[in-house]
Amino acid sequence: PAFPAQRSVILTGAASPRGIGRFTAHYLAERGWNVGILDLDAEASQKLAAEIAEKHGVAAAGAGANVADESRVRAAFDALEAELPQLVAVVNLAGVSSPVPYLEVSAEEWHRVIDINLHGVHHTTKRAVETMVRHGVGRVVNLSSVSAQRGGGTFSKTAYSAAKAGVLGLTRSLARELGHQGITVNAVSPGPIDTDIMGGTLTDERKEKMAADGVLPRIGTPRDIAAAIHYLIGEDAGFVTGQTLNVDGGLYMH
Ligand code: NAD
Image (cartoon, rainbow, N blue to C red; front, side, top):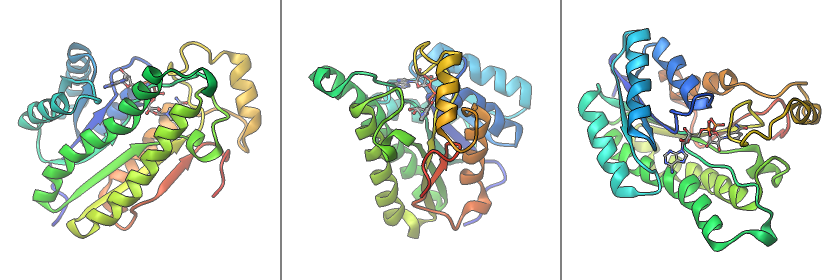
């Protein structure tokens, strides 16, 4: 089946003011995608959707849900799909960092991070691909992290790396299962990106140190990631599946 002219993408974790998701939502809308926003706070999601609709002249809708809560995710998707043209793509950006060293990590912290960063991806993806399978076309993009591939070495520690590595396994396995149904499943793996996820610890000095570690002498921007996502959800990326696109300035070469 062909890509529909009127197509929608749902982004999770797109409401934070300086995040990758918000930038990507605008970037995709500017390029003709209708946009659904799913984040913790319903009001913030709806406000962003209204901004996007106004600025880019596309359909946009927002809903609130904790991605760790499967029934809330399903309800939010129902609401978003009711307001949007055909759902073709889902981008899983909702995530939390966790700088706790392994020997200090509590059971609560471990489960919080895995519940949001791994189970959350499963909940939204499962609901999204149910729609995509019916139409015979779909794109899933999951945000992993260089910390899953290099054994941390960034702000977050083991629980985060474990969850983000789990995302890569989910991505590859699902790509294999759903290829025959016209659905591609890929991951984007960012290096350090200038957002607020590191809770104010990303000082200029730290940015310089992180940049010095890579082949390209800077840290990344939300635009770097948005461009990769735009490519992977596009019609022309239909022969690319099960891949991890590293957007990390050369930190991890593979
Ligand atoms: P961010 O903190 O700006 O955005 C994360 C978003 O997820 C926020 O809008 C937040 O409200 C939302 N969120 C958190 N918990 C949620 C939950 N339980 N349910 C629903 N939404 C929830 O961070 P960002 O830097 O834009 O990160 C986006 C994604 O990219 C994350 O998955 C992150 O792990 C990944 N990533 C970021 C970097 C980086 O350096 N910034 C590097 C590698 C990977």
